[in-house]
Length: 263
Image 1 (spheres, rainbow, N blue to C red):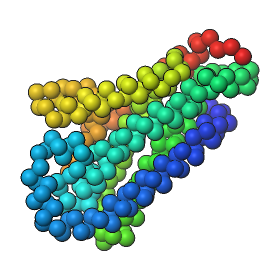
Image 2: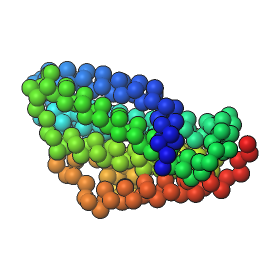
Image 3: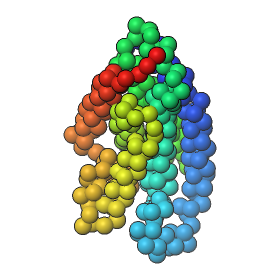
């Protein structure tokens, strides 16, 4: 893999990556700032306990403010983080692969000795690198918020697993987004598929008799409230994410290499 290919992809999406990172950091620090007042207010706890669980799940609001990590699992990870991952990955995959195909800016790469497979894998790795950057910004802001406003109390295992599962989920979305964009250079298909997976997980979580939908969804492993409570994903689930992402990246390079792209 030539570093120049990955560097080009990173250069394409670095500004948006920095922007998302700043937004995430500001939001988490705001949540950390208000957490002490919510955790010690019994009226808030009573109000949330009287609301329907389905409504709380749809709004991404946690009724458990007993721990800082559990609070963030509901107020950030359950909804906001998932939507950031879905939108960021699909849109940046479009900028990396779909947009260059639409505006015919691939001429230089198509005429260079670098193969199409190498170029596609470079774009995938650049997007994975951006996701690692977002994960680092999320963890850093969570630790900083705990240090500034909450006495430095962090449930390390829960925090690390929350961010690792979010990272693996984002990389998997990046994999199939690259496959679809290597085939048809529009963001509609990968975004639609991602929203369907999200809806499956949401419906499966709210209706016990439809729980199999959550199992079939790529978001089925990403259950922030359970992870924050200590229910870490199984090794087989993590290996499935890693293997699935690798296979999808390889498939994307194969599909792209067979496209009829004119200079």
